[in-house]
Image 1: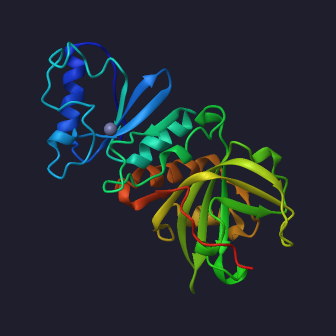
Image 2: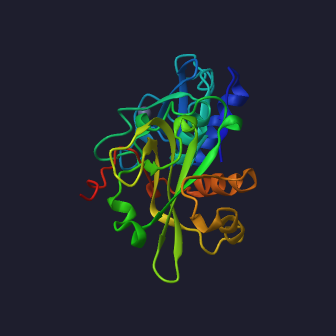
Image 3: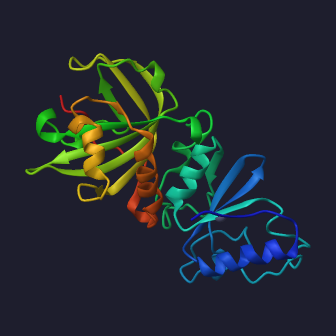
Length: 270
Ligand SMILES: [Zn+2]
């Protein structure tokens, strides 16, 4: 869940501080300039027993105007327990976000490479179209993990895909079991050098590790039918199913379960 605190007054300051106390393992983004955010661990370094975080945020006990006459919510604060959710929120709004270098360290690495998954969506979330990309390991001859991350080959026209969102689903085993593997926003399209496909689309996004099992979800069989059992390749997702995918992304609350662009999964099979 996203909580936003914005206003130079005692009440908003205290509500933000209360959120930090209640969500010690959460994250918050602070707006440094208009529409530019920096993501920190919710807790100040001096409050965290392991020394995680930075000491630029001040403790959660600091009262309004106590710290250099300041209010912690003069700059807008956007908070969540899920880093992936914060990134999705910012991505949907085309906002500029960065990791705090003092929070995101070698020892306390953020679960997601934030700088690589932002600024992707063009236009508002309402205008973004959603597509499904299906990978059947048996048919394709290589596993999902072996494929180039956040990319798809297709015989279809790709120009219209820029700025749109793709959800990758894999199918393995018999009977087939389906998993949601990643979601990404297309920022590069072109002609493919691979024989099987004439075009490619690529982007940056978020990988679900471990993959999310979806075969048994109540809406999945209807979705599968709407996709003709994934026989049609890269295919538009009907509006009625999009909220289910959004919910899976938001529901991945444990930040450690989400990884991002920049993960090299190994080369494409020759
Ligand atoms: Zn920080």
